[in-house]
Length: 68
Image (cartoon, rainbow, N blue to C red; front, side):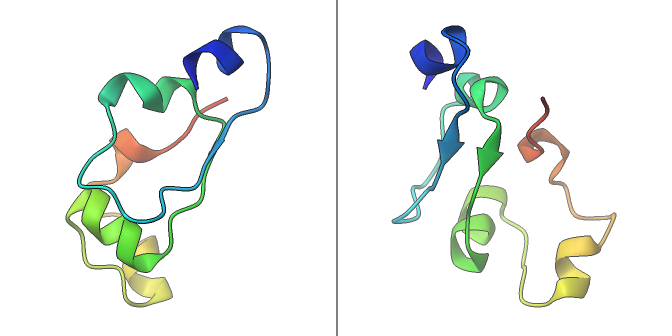
C-alpha cells in the first residue's frame, strides 16, 4: 500500500475478511476503504447496523476517514 501510494497510484483497501486491526500507518496511504458493516464494526468498535448509525456524529470514526 505504501509503495503504491508513494508512486502516485490510487489505493483501495477492501478489508475482507474483517481483520482485527489495520496498521495505523496504512490509513494515510489510502484513498478509499470499502468495509462492509461487519468489517467496519470490527475495525472501529462501533455498531453500524443502519444508515443512521453510519451518519451518527458521535461515532468515533474520524481516524478511519480517508483523506486525499
